[in-house]
Length: 172
Image (spheres, rainbow, N blue to C red):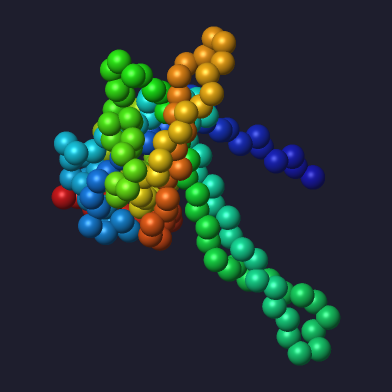
């Protein structure tokens, strides 16, 4: 019996992008112009090493059939949660602080994995998720010895999340 070949992975280091995109007309078909507009903010390097958390849970619905002795399941409600932990600088506010720091602002988090941070977004760019959010209240991360000041912030998901299999980037 042949052994399965070891599948090669890709290092996470240096291969991820997190953007704040204020406006996307159709999150399932974003344009290159929308994703590269001068209003788009690059957030990646303002986040702490564990500073981006997007969790996706799917509730399970248990179903049955007349006389069937096996429980069946189907997908239920999808729940996405997003939380960011960002660098805080009272003297020189960071891009994230000036972009996300005000509660109640609507926009979109665009998460892209597998490309270097300086990747130029084009028609062939694959996007992991577009998450429509409203900013919540940032809170202090308690400072500790030999640490950097940080804020942590929940971003409230306000509309259906577009996932990578649903996204087709179109030229402007």
